[in-house]
Image 1: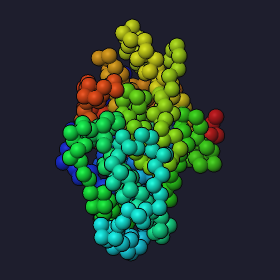
Image 2 (image 1 turned 180 degrees about the horizontal axis):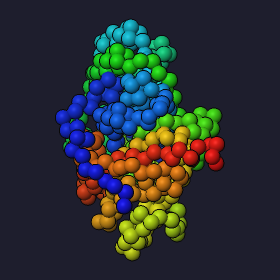
Image 3 (image 1 turned 180 degrees about the vertical axis):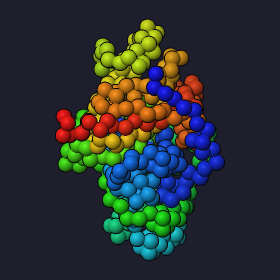
Image 4 (image 1 turned 60 degrees about the horizontal axis):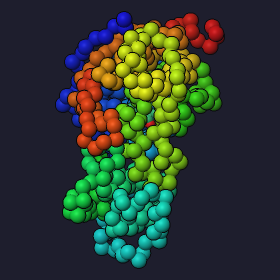
Length: 421
Ligand SMILES: C[S@@+](CC[C@H](N)C(=O)[O-])C[C@H]1O[C@@H](n2cnc3c(N)ncnc32)[C@H](O)[C@@H]1O
């Protein structure tokens, strides 16, 4: 139907995925930098490539890679943590100021006293005594307090380091995106060194920053938080303004696929960001539509089979597909004629039936004036995502998800610009 090409060259099995500012912060289902990089190198549209857009930017991999190539970029995500990470990764912080702050940070273990901590109100964090020891909370609060005394221009650099620590010192189980508490026995032995962790993250990030500043020319990078399902503001992205999209959208709702909201809740609550507690509900496919049919030829058969098997799951899938296609509908006019889109998608399995999201993506963009060029199939050895996910909220319940991803490459027809509408 839509031509797929299996290509081993896209595996990047031994690639270093932590170069530059890519080392800053873990994030679920990150795109590996080499994929974004190679897409830009091979598929930047001819004529010009001045602006790359990522409509689901996550931790900002595409934006960093665009700037390394000297190309301006705009990214959006409705997860505030994603915006924090992406902003931090693409900001040209002043190295001297950061080093000065670090010399203060390394003294924390010696100068810290509980009595110095001003804010001990943690009520913004749900069930905080269940998730944290008192010692960790107080030390995290101390770090926040000192970051606020730093030069405003570098505060974000330290906040992104703190954000990782906030999650790591909680009692959440390692290796899960969902919030599962460690076993009591483990908690008794769990005594994280909050200050050491924070310092080591900041130092690691500083190394990445130096490399990034060295290798990236100055470009214009805009981090946004608009919801592509609803609307893409014209004042930010006028029609026909984008040369290229390099992105990896979610591949299902966050409840049953990748739990972005749960993973991000630690930081989102710590920084008191909006929607911290209900993010999964507002992300794509998060709110279920009742009884709906979706117009599609490309995945009609699969949807029919799921509908027969389990109507509730069918509605979940359809709700996601509705949001996803609305988002593509809003994105399509923003691309200039001749511009290219590269969508890295996953084909999840529901009730044992694989949903070819790559076909669906191609079908919808075709409807809005794009030609399908090819779909590259790559193995995902490096994708930071469990190869098995828990489809229920039961700890340990796993089903195999996918080990391939599909890179859908399409270009906008030349007669599809604003003038021809
Ligand atoms: C697969 S992740 C992107 C990962 C990213 N490529 C990276 O390297 O980190 C998908 C992202 O889509 C975001 N998202 C979900 N629904 C969205 C919506 N309606 N508008 C914008 N972003 C959305 C999620 O918050 C998540 O960060």
